[in-house]
Amino acid sequence: MSHLAKNYNRKKISFRYGKGSYLFSTNGKKYLDFVQGIAVNSLGHSHPKLVRTINLQAKKLWHVSNAFQIPEGEELANKIAKKTFANYIMFQNSGAEATEAAIKIARRYFYSIGKPQKNRILCVKNSFHGRTLAAIHASGSKKMIEGFGPKVGGFDHFKFGDHKDLKKKITKRTAAIMVETIMGEGGIKTIPDWCLKALRKICNKKNILLIIDEVQCGIGRTGDFFAFEKSKIKPDIVPIAKGIGGGFPIGAVLMNKKVASAMTPGTHGSTFGGNPLAMKVGSTVLDIVSSKKFLNNVKKNSQYFHNKLDKIKKTFPRIIKEVRGRGFLIGLQLHGDQAKFIEKLMENKLLTIRAAENVVRILPPLNVKKGEIDQALKIINKVCLKFYQ
Ligand SMILES: Cc1ncc(COP(=O)(O)O)c(C=O)c1O
Image (cartoon, rainbow, N blue to C red; front, side, top):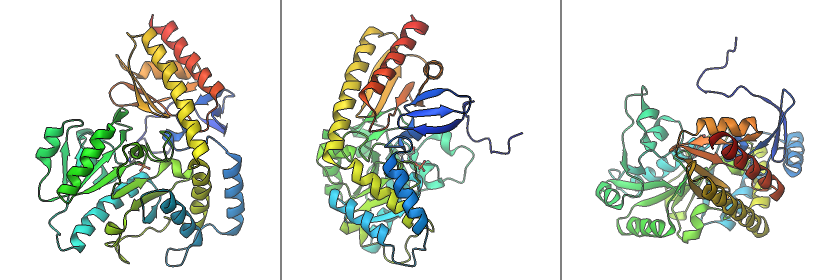
């Protein structure tokens, strides 16, 4: 019997090793991996530069306490600050920790300026910000909080896309509005650029902080380093994770100078967050993923993928309802339940994963080759043709 806890509904497959866009199963089969650890392995499996970085650093130094200076963390923070809106970066180990820290920063900021009652966080109903107690309450999903009472207070929710509801839910006590630029788990739903702009304006007018959760949609996934960049706005706080580690657990909160002033010594901490091994891996990922050439390639190849998927949708309008997302954060919304479709793709050696609203989520590595995209398209087409007509 297995002593692994039963909190996942795992597929009956395991893997021996991975290389680039492919996973090789323990029973000798080769799969095109368009899950990539749910947008984590941004450079695919066993990227030679990451393997080299991890080997070199493992021989030098893995971990020291944050009680000491960590030059590797200074280096990564400086690189991130140089490329983004952020003035300061606080390293964590996961997305949920990063979103929790973002909430803490927002509350602490208003506390530090003598407005401790301005502490409520306004989020999208049925969004996803992680699985800690605060994060599940931020997500506003009944299913996620069921059985985990008492309720964690301080969160309000508005319906995605409902601007009237958003305005109604803002009060004098709203400290921050937290949104995902593209809802990942929630069904690959994108906030249009003009909405992000309007959101920034509302926040400015009402002295509210804007937190943009880029844990899933950030780090090059959309072809821009951050998905919100296209709207040209500047958030106050941005939690990141997933792609920045390329498979190594790293989370971080990026913040501007104003809010960072509240995070004085002792206000937050993490034993593992920002250790030298993680920082070196993060630095290598960032160097590759943030280059203009790399991002342009993501834009070009993902546009090709979207165009072809649109064609498949047109051929099978009774199967595919909508092609959603941007860059390599792609959702195929089906008319029916997506579980069987995902199963059929897997039987044909293409791995994908579900999202809400009958969506099949497609998350190739950012450096996926055009030939691999063609292979995936062929499989998707075949599944539509063979099993649904
Ligand atoms: C937008 C978003 N925020 C936060 C999280 C939580 O990240 P983690 O699972 O690393 O805690 C996720 C994970 O899927 C996510 O998609």
